[in-house]
Length: 88
Image 1 (cartoon, one colour):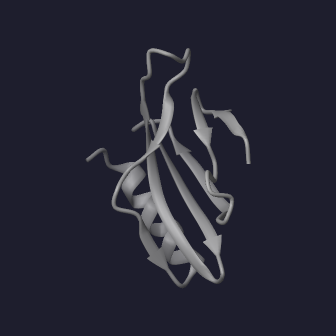
Image 2: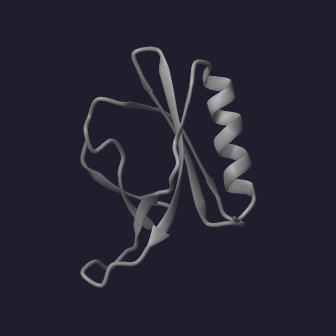
C-alpha cells in the first residue's frame, strides 16, 4: 500500500503488505494515531506519533514500541485507544 497523508502526517500504512489495516483512530488531544492490523487471525495493535524529517514538508507517523498482539479485535482496539488518550 502506498504512503498517504493522514491527519497532518505521512503514513506508510502497511510497509510489508502482509498486515491488513482494520482500524485506525486519530486522537487530536494527544496528536496520536491508534491502529490495529490483521494477519491470519492475529491482531497487531500499535500507536503512532509524528516525527519531523527535514527532507519532507510533513512529519511522518512513526510507530511506537512495543506493539501488542491480540486474538480478539475488541481487545486490540481498547488497548490502542487507551494509549492514545494519555500522552506518555
